[in-house]
Length: 427
Image (tube, rainbow, N blue to C red; front, side, top):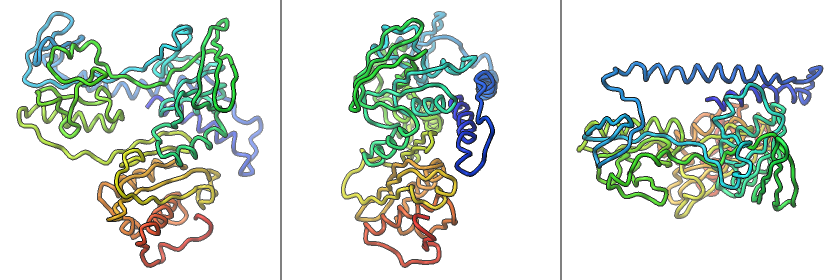
């Protein structure tokens, strides 16, 4: 939630700056008060966190131990005050932490991680941001729109969670029009007074630039290092994490379960909540363990335009798959609101026409991603989805256009009815 507070402030500033497109003149434009922005971010952050802390305080003292726990046996934990606990079943839910790559060691005192941003008293003048995952993109665009000179660097070429090369290229081109973005970049860092000088080589050439601070957004490794998992007898992967069944959250055939960011499977809050529920139920009923059906995967990045991967993403596609797409440059409602940029690709099994996934970059795609996730979870076919209502004019009509293209690819185009009539190019 704290990063979304940054984004909300950035969207307000961007709306003022772009008002001229609609014939609205705002004398002086947007003036960003960095201290006021941070005061709201921290005030609302504290309110959100306060609710979590209140729920912990309600746990009776006799059921709550505070301290660092580590395994000393398959069913035995030791707290750092020496207390030992024998448990019939144990749930690991220790979360994750931001990482800082070793390449930043020479300038370590000038390096921040995402958690640090929310303690700022004011906005900095410049930021060099390492990483183009979800967190890096969201914070990078927000800081840029709040007037912070920002440049993003990445060794890879992926934008957020996107892996469909066509959608990824579209997202890169759209975001790079606003935000300085260097992919497949080799970088070197050195101190430059109280700043950091970054030298880079990328496909577009070489360059250098100094920044007040470097923000590392290169992922969040699981908090496993101090748990003593080697004493559990569990099979561990090459990261030292226990292997587990995502349908039960059970580690091997043991009475140990794992949930949330720490397992690295679906590091999203709503998924962590589901995993915690599954792990808790199965731990409480151990040795009776039930397989639970997981919800359709859904990942959303709150950039502008937003990114989303729903269901089976591009790299998970198997067998004979049909693809339907829509380009949002001419989508009717998108042009009305001045947000006509984006691309959506929807996947279906060719033999049945069943919707299985999508990758998207489009305006306000968080809403369309939910609609597709529901359709996928209900195992709707592309023709089934076209039978559902689409209001005109809405951004959701773009989903209809992509599904119509998918039906054409499947050779299952249903008879046109009133809901299928187009009212202009891409509308």
